[in-house]
Image (cartoon, rainbow, N blue to C red):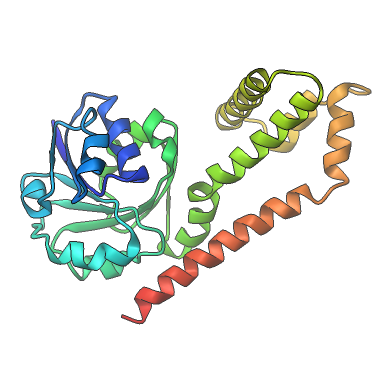
Length: 259
């Protein structure tokens, strides 16, 4: 059984712990100074501790799920060996910055909160990525391997992307409510529609444009709605949101370049 220690039990660290706990393939240690944070993930972890060094001593994989601005002092408290693997999740935190501060093999990834349900989308740097970490990521969802130069845009697409998708789901929900559906009914239909559409994109060999055509019957309801979207700036707004998130990721990385 692979031993995984997660440092930082906030939203992302908690999602990792709960997602891995679903598989029964890992011995999980949750590490956080905050007792409330540890308590929040106690049901998913095999053990919890506030001692990062002791909690990672026997780990095969250590997941660093802390805010970028406290990563350096946390790393200073760790004494990892060359046969351990360190996975860093922090947005904008360069892999090299982490690798210079530990003997462990380091890989940088950008996951999202859907790790909790096994539906994660993640990007991982090709440098430092091992088969053991690939297996871990595969247990949490889908992932792609990218050069680190692409991590800022990956952060925007799959790291920030869930919030953009939630926004669009809510917009569809509001459209349903305006038409007379109960809020719970509209939310279920909108959310499940996004879920099904995403699965279709991942599993179907057709392109997104071909899938749109498949739904749009001539003179039908969908084509009328699509005409509104095609005539709007909706696609440009989403692209601008991705670009803004990407730029912020770059700004975060620049702070570490100066150190």
